[in-house]
Length: 454
Image (tube, rainbow, N blue to C red):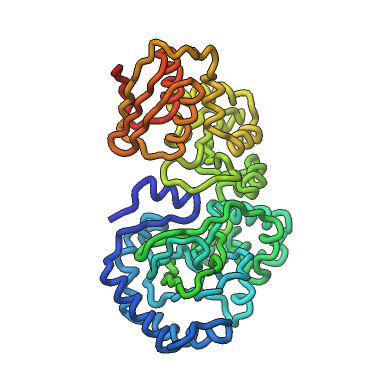
């Protein structure tokens, strides 16, 4: 079993991945019952109402966290972890039971990355370093503000880019220079790690503005893969009266040291690209790949309303390294090839910063309307005809909504049936239907839609 290309890309884009319907439900139920029975044993009548009340549970669960039943949850997930961080993975000998009781999380407004919170820094030793967090939901968590895992999609890129600036701008090598190249550690990233180890996240939280806070809504048995550097909260507030959300968390470590995860090495070692750091820190996107001829950026469209999406998500922008000119733009499944060509023409004389800003603000609906405006529309309702458009599938609600709005622009009626196969019946004057179809074809479809006169 392995993760698909789309799943791996989603993880790289957003720093987390949600996967359902993979684990044995009987195993999940057995583990959930064991934890619930222990909670009932400690709190037979009333659930904890304060941090002091919850200390009984904290002590009790420490014994459960090394039990075989709980640790067995990770076994079928390890092959998928290898898709994300490589084959050599250390053994897993403990887990963390994270139960969020009613009323908990109301004061969890501040984000963090693990190992560098005030609580962590107050320990005699920091917890062991790791590469990947795996969460297994033991309860249905389908309603927002019910203690949901809450993160900032793509924020791990902002954290790493700020690590670059921290290294250079604060000149922290004066204090931490001994860690550059120390033993097997990764030089510059290791310096940033030791800065965080001593100073925590204050500088990060002061300088990084995270957006698009996202609560994971998912059923019991869901697996949550989380990048080690993804900023997240302890949880969303649990506003229910009696619901307890429980996730079992595992920390997965590579067998070799990997401290380069604390910086973005692709940019760090290339002084001509350091201007990208500020763009990435703002959450606009990230550097996906680079070679001696070109670089590919993945940019968030509609950044203020951006929602993680497994398919039509980020926009690929290919830049010529020699002259920093736009070579190609690709929307990963939203616009058609011909639309990409039109957009390339619109943007070809813009600089990188301008291109990124346009994509961050883009509304695909407005963009397509600009290319195919509703002008010279026939309003005479004589000679009415119907066309049937047959799609391989229609699943996207955003595309469906666009087509319904466009129909009004062209004075036609549409009836859309979503699913496999999808259909659209357009009724109106043929001239108007033809203009409407031009807009429809500006969208990406896996198979070219078939138009029939009916």
